[in-house]
Length: 245
Image (cartoon, rainbow, N blue to C red; front, side):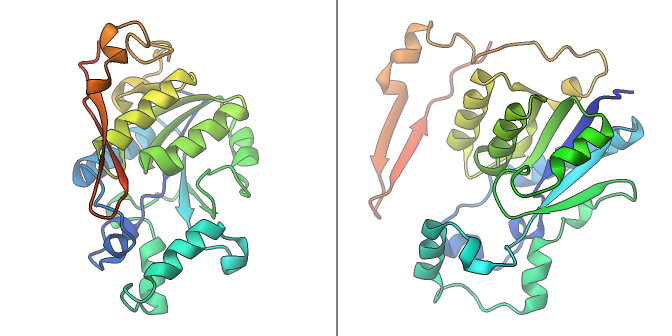
């Protein structure tokens, strides 16, 4: 039993599996490897509960203050697409925010609502973690480069040891996913498969940077990182993932 470890399950909500075109209209592609990642999240939850490791879910919701509390750019973006977003009832909108059934919280799990990418911002997560005696946080869920990374960075600011389960997180494509994981490694976030990270004897000291960070000549080869313009004029980054040692 890892007594000082807590699992944070980030935003595994129905909106990601909904067949309602909302993400598509907003310009967001499907989540890469979604089914595989959700299955890994389910296995992680089962293992954590079997070892009596506390689990805390985040549930992303809209602020009670509505657009008054929202990021102005996000508001403008959504307003620009509002005519294309399918009409939804209050029940349907609420369903999109609920935790996916296959990952439903158990009786002893905690679910806290959040209105910002970081699970720590404007929530009671930090006092909850302190009450649980947490020193290490194992983060899983969605999305790698958004709420997972924002939460990991905030956790570091609170002096927790932080790990991200690389096989139980994902986002809008492999380039964003791997780029985010590399960024977190440099910040002293442990990145590895969850089955290794959850082990009681795992030191969480396998690497403090990305493999061969800045030392492999290929790291500086601009042919491995290129930018292309799509039809809408948006920059899309294509990253050739090198073999990791």
